[in-house]
Length: 76
Image 1: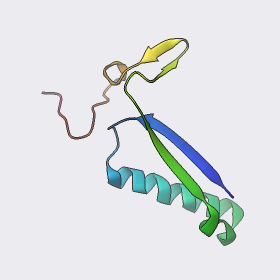
Image 2: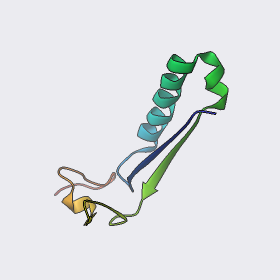
Image 3: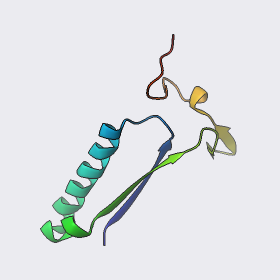
């Protein structure tokens, strides 16, 4: 079974964007493996809590990511 796991900062994607990730990832697997992959493809979009991940030994927060704003909020 093809499987893809996306980990994203929480509250940075809308439900529609998550749906698009699932749909487009499934289509990619179908393109590669053929139609037989469609019914068996699993796509998991996991939201990681702010400050719950890091790079190069540094914890990252949403505020540290350039231009990232949680969905449903504004910069003003």
